[in-house]
Image: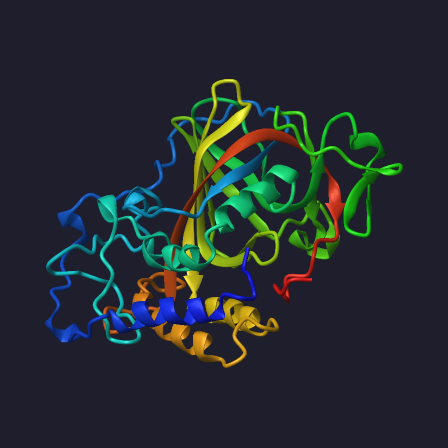
Length: 363
């Protein structure tokens, strides 16, 4: 959670990051060839026939991993730009807007500047952010819901329909029939509803604004051509998708394009294991999040932290928001991101109005 007593620490830390970068001449960089090194990609679509479909399945994702320090970021995410940026050439598909040296990739070309630089920056001043986000998810808030239909239950299914949504709240099978939202709190009669038990029987209510007109048949985050390969669910969502990760006071709202979600369906189909969520976080959307944070009273009254953070973003931008790239002479206009989660079978209880995403200030 973000304490109002931290702005000076925020400014100091960001100064360290902003002044530690180097400037280089892009014309001197060897662009290289993506075929030189292995490229970590999702499993390919299987070439098999469809079998009869099972009933709809839902997985609720929690245990978000934002903290990837100690080099862990290198093994999280995918090679989004199909080019392995390594020393000494640092081949790249675009240039950081500031002219700084392009960030290197993780293992097998994984693009994950969020895990390498941005997340450690945030966690150094918000050390409880991951803990708070996980606690909120355990409570049933901010859980990513993976809604799967058209799946035949086999290890390889070439065509599956998947929708993603974010939960407002969740509860147990026992409380599900009688729960109602009162002033934003799920209640059963005069008491608070029980928290999810995460045993595959819980019910979750999705944000109604994740669906056009609040119609559950019209999901906004949707891939009608997902697939399962070798037991791995593979989902691609090119359009803008919003994923809030709430904290006790202030959380993170990630707005991603070209989102990729991959997870291993457990043998009993009760878990979606080792889920990777990756994508491109546009600089404009990131700056909107930063500006919204700075607008909170007592966070950055001088405006200095926002200015420094915006310079940092210009230093570490490593991908284009929408591929294909406009060419190596173009500026990068997005940051790559990779995070991990774990999924448990669940049920959809319905839709509910979620907290506004227009402000992230503490109440």
